[in-house]
Amino acid sequence: MQIKCENIKYIYNPKDPNSYYALDDISLEIEKGDFVAIVGKTGSGKSTLIQTFNGLILPTSGYSQVEYFYITSDKKLFKSKIKNLSKQEQIDNKKQYMLRKKVGMVFQFPEYQLFAETVLKDVMFGPRNFKVPEEEAKELSKKALSEVGISEEYYEKSPFELSGGEKRRVAIAGILASNPDILILDEPTAGLDPDGKKDLIKLIKEIHESGKTVILVTHDMDVVMECASKVVVLNDAKLMKICTPEELFNGDDFETFALEIPTFYKFKKMLIEKGYKKDISSINDFDSLMGVLGEKHE
Amino acid sequence: MNSVFGKLTPYNTIIHRLDPRVKIISLIALMVMCFLPYGNYANRFIILGGLFLIILFIMLLGRVSFLSFLKSLRHIWFMMVFLVIIFALIPQAGDTSTKHVMIAFENGYTIYWEGVLQTLHISFRLGLMLSLTLILTSTTSPMDLTYAFEWFLSPLRLIKFPTQIISMTLSLALRFIPTLLSEANKIMKAQKSRGVDYQRGFLGKKIKSVTTLIVPLLVSCFSRSDELSLAMNARGYEPYEKRTSYNILIFGLKDVVAIFVVLILVGGFSTLCYFTNNVEGFDDMINMIFGVATF
Image 1 (cartoon, rainbow over the protein chains, first blue to last red):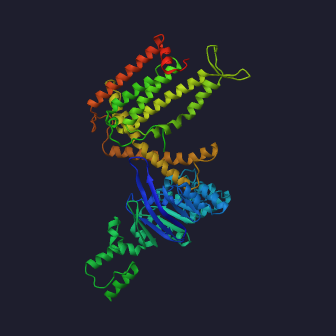
Image 2: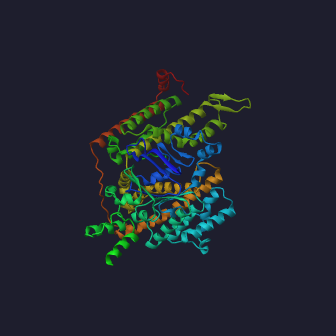
Image 3: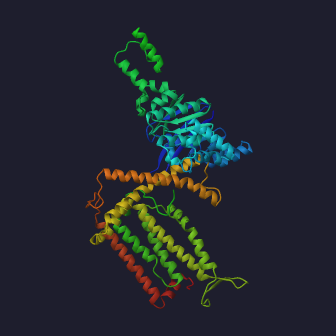
């Protein structure tokens, strides 16, 4: 288990008449190397949940755990959790500085975080904050930039001169350069054109294949179907379901979560409704479905 | 994000329902009452204490959190320390023979009671001003405040002053404060994820950290204002056209009562101010009633 949430609750504006639960009693576990999609309608608590994974938000009660890091605002609970850790781990827990290095977070519209004079300097900013020596940070940054498809000619350009898609790739490189073990992306494809979206999804899949744990918050069910090994469904701050994408999209309760049906399942549903004779209910990918459809023609 | 000014609390109290114009006038009137000279220090503290009790009562009526008042006081600590240095610690110039010694050091340096009391007095006044501002901002929506300002500025239209443009600018600025705060919050979180620590570090490091917030915030601010002006143009906004308002402020009975109460308070405090400064023996009366040394 790499990430764990134990009965976490989070209240926005406590002691205010406008206070509300953003997370209500959420417990879940994520294994190393998982590709987890967190889905749910707007305001269901997805972004709040992922922010507890790198300590940007401290749960009001309960705790999130990332390896040996404990994240909670309950001081008593925090002390009891870290008391059996080694001295160094206790220090790391108190500073939560190493946690940020371990868990890279790409926010929605990450291009808004760019600030440095040049693209390379901006990407180097993260590693330098994590005390990586300058030369090594430069190498890591160049590697990250090439991974996201930004060529050398851009290195000395101002990030503000780039196009929207390029800015986003630079911002993602800024996170990748710190070489996090866990990568969390909050709606990374929002506002991108189809090609940009395809490239980004390809990149995320490659990052996952390199052995990193990837957590993706998205409304795009095609992406969930294509990439995720596990889906976490949130609704009105509550955890509804943890399952595989196939279980979710074939399930009866899918529509109650106000999620969009992936193109494949729309097509499959249409075939069944139009009276396609063969049993295709257990098929969950286009290749297998095409195989069955091909058989009919022969 | 904490601020000296309060955040609107969505209750429906009598204070919330008052006309914003009445609230602004009352705020100014009560602020002036804080700054009237009430004779010697004992008088000043007793009278300002009375004013504080009245303000507390208004806070209670408007369900303004006392905790948020205490929190807002944190922002004037710096000012108080500065005042202590100015009034109590810096040697007093001029004739000091009439002043009361608090601490006399061997090297001749002296701290006078007057200096300390002056610091306390100014801090008390500032605290009262803060509490009044907090009541206004906690019980009035920014848009209502804008409508009220527009109304106050309306006589200037006679001299062709563009009051509507000013009020539109003001309302847009107010409208974008929460957006910018949320934007700043998002950027801070994104930079924290890249290892920026906004809390710790020395001045140089802090300035560097703030740059990582300010630059993206300015860029986003300009891009938003650009988009907004285009959107306004697209919807036919013409700054010099005559405009009507969707929200019309109505002056009701409760507002008349509120103005009446404020007038009584202004009358009462002005009378006290007059008595403490012009009627001989009034200081002694206070001394007799409360048993406090007056100087």
